[in-house]
Image 1 (cartoon, rainbow, N blue to C red):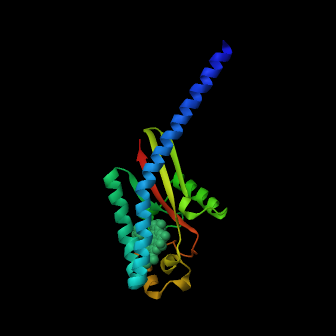
Image 2: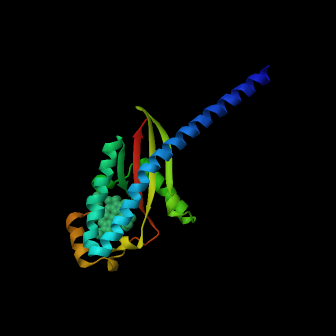
Image 3: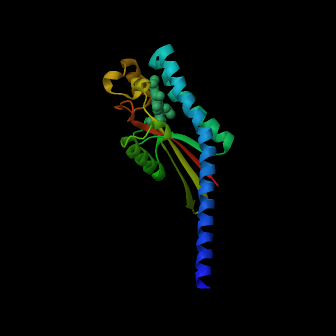
Length: 191
Ligand code: HEC
């Protein structure tokens, strides 16, 4: 009799955790589907802008287009979408919270172990005082085209340096090499 109860409870527990896994997977798939076009557009727009008009015109992509895309996605979906980093250029919108800091650390470690940039993501359902929140982060890895604004001092032109100094007096987002984790696209969804 007792054995039956134990088996029944085990089945119930595994059914519950399977349900939780399915829920997390479904949220992950849905959020990723919205995040990927953002990432693709960001990388492509940036490449195009650097090729067409040099880094000064690419400033537009990172400064105007990316935050605009993030806030459009936020509005459309009712999610909170931002680009964050531990070495931030725009502290107003790019500063990490505790979860984001941990997620970036995890992805940095995974990248160091040889994981491909395309698969770098972290997802979790967090239980808080006001209910559950789904947290998602897609890693943003530095491309060769990014060094003209995020690379070493000798890779950044005087014109870009001057405009960065004027607009971002607290800029920490330089000194990166391609392949390094620059930050993440962070999405937070109340459930
Ligand atoms: C021409 C200059 C320029 C280039 C090239 C550039 N960025 Fe940026 N990046 C900026 C500026 C300016 C900001 C601050 C934007 C803002 O005010 O929100 C920024 C911010 C960011 C942020 C948000 C976090 C933070 O530090 O504020 C990420 C992530 C980022 N860039 C990644 C990249 C990646 C990846 C590339 C290459 C695909 C790239 N950037 C290329 C100028 C540039």
